[in-house]
View 1: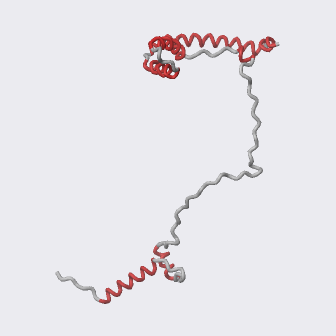
View 2 (view 1 turned 60 degrees about the horizontal axis):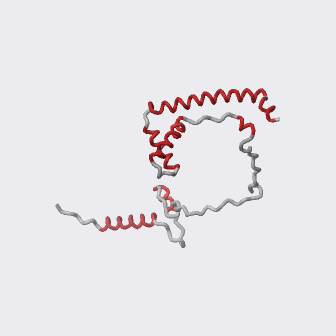
View 3 (view 1 turned 90 degrees about the vertical axis):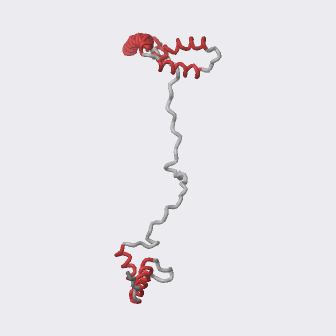
Length: 175
């Protein structure tokens, strides 16, 4: 098969097209304004020049806000805190511990007998928590029963306390 060489007219037209494309696609130098027809060609083709592309964002440093006299923070008055152990609080019944704390009392005694070298409460607490999590529910029942008994006693005592408080008997005892 024979290959034809392109004619000189074809070569000239290809070179002209390439020159026109370069002329329309590349931005003009700053000294020469872009011809109007070149702008129209770019707009129709949907092409963007370097100046039309979005610039990269700059790295900015955030400054602390400037305080104006209106926004200047004023020292807030501290709310009055109640004193620990006021008379009303001393008469109130104390909440009973949970089943875990009853277990912890027994466990601490046995653990310290078995491991006299361990004196850090953190180590004792970790060992106690691990054993509590590994225990079966049947083993925990005695501690749950003890906790529910104490909780019932607390609720009775709390009901009596609330009655005295409503009737005003507690305020008379203060005087």
